[in-house]
Length: 205
Image (cartoon, rainbow, N blue to C red):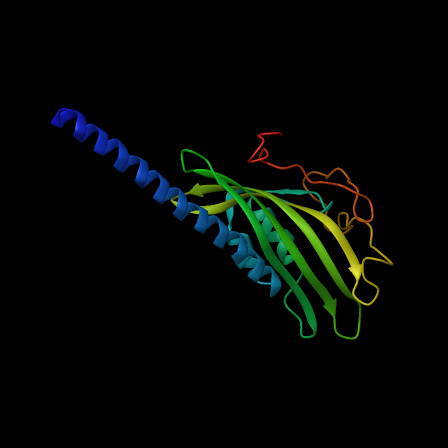
């Protein structure tokens, strides 16, 4: 092999290593972004939540409808009001499956949120939701391009999933969405939110 050919091969191998290193960094950044979202939601830090979204981001939680743009997302979040003593609202972000696009500018992610929601002296709920989200690198920073949360279940803490379950949460009467969300089944019915990826072993959709 000539020196020129060897140098070209080394350059190509270095470029491949750099791409893989960047993809690994992007994976961690997207994972941290989503988990940061959960921590902010836990304590009703709504401005912090809205800051995580891209300028033209989309928010769609349960069947409460779609909200378009960072400003509308901020309005939606602030609608819930400030944190209150005695209110528990944990949104634990787990089971990430993240795919970074080859150009390193967009990504897709599937997460699960395990939720503890309640008020001291009032009701207490266990909840579960699946996220199918899109992310974008905007101005060199990873942001949420689209957050889609599918309610799996909400059940009373004292009765659990074997006795009682709440229906799908729909839009607020006092805060209409920009676009409605089509209803879907929730526990005890069976519904699988669409995967953004194929089976990694078989390739089956």
